[in-house]
Image 1 (cartoon, one colour):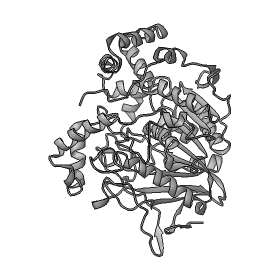
Image 2 (spheres, one colour):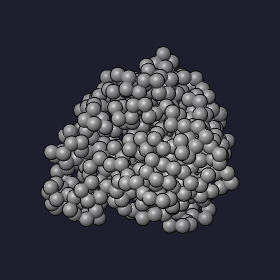
Image 3 (cartoon, one colour):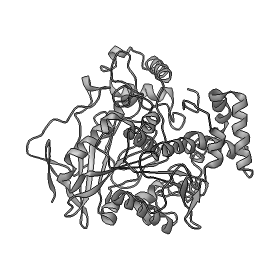
Image 4 (tube, helix red, strand yellow):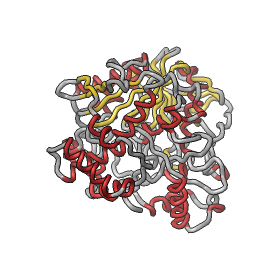
Length: 491
């Protein structure tokens, strides 16, 4: 059971829990260094013999971590990061596959975040779980004039990992015809891109997202970012493959660091992985027949307000930049009417939650519901997956938890770990069960979402319920408005 034969060679995994096996650090593409830097991934080099697959591969180069979990040190950050991990129940054969795309704003994160080793879903639903790393920040999403495709090599990495999974997962007991792609935050937005991409046709059976929607660069945004980046790097694009990778990261961080760098780095419509705006492609049926489960949290952007106390203050400027002062004022007035209990700061957090998540996800679910079953939900519960009492950051996060109720990412730990993620145990178990059922059957257990009634499951500790169109006020306020999402903080 521990040795699996892939198209590129044999890999030896290990039993990580009773009846659960894992293979880690498998290369799904060639190392993207040297001449391959900032170019789409190429297939891995086959290896002789049996490759040890008991340790995780390098994580993508990214800003330093703010918090550290106790226990064994994770793999270092490195430009050589295109590795994936597979977890499967013992004796698996033709089992549904859950393919996880991590979050982190396209600039931080690793495949095991929230998903951990994937063992919880392997045990509870017999799923084969695939997690992976991809190029982040400038190394994944910098546009280079005169090169094509450019500006979305991180998305190409994600597609390469999905294609590798389709081609090889049967060797680990998975069914390549039953792959569910699931992502949170930037991973949720990636799910939208995967549904829109012509390169994923036939690879996806089902799709799920948390706090997703769509978020790509416009050509103007791409050009501006490229100019600013090379000004910081201190060299020209022709030399970008010769400079040390650390210099690229330093130039990226000189522009901005988390959380104020949120939404700077994202894919461009490169003509290959994406041939147009992702929602336009999905409206036209690019993902016809693929069921979609889409969830947002009730207080998405409170997380950014907690990380940067000036986050809400950006709302007036950002909205006026999109629509002008009059329309911006109308949006704030509509939000105030819908949420009369909110003070000025909380009101702006709510408006920006609509701008960044609720309205964009609503347009995604409306588009896909014309072509396939769609299920929408909202999470109204506590933050899950926070560090436990043995963590050096426990006291800080214990204070953070009440403030972050139903904030961005609050649902992720529960979906992956169920009641073991903390928070409300019963509610967490319900989330885990719903995502597991969807990955197995395509039905999470509640009424479909259609544009006739927009039924939405609300996951609430006081009692889960199906609500008719809980996003109606936001949808009405933003009706007829079109905007190109940008950053919140000037950089």
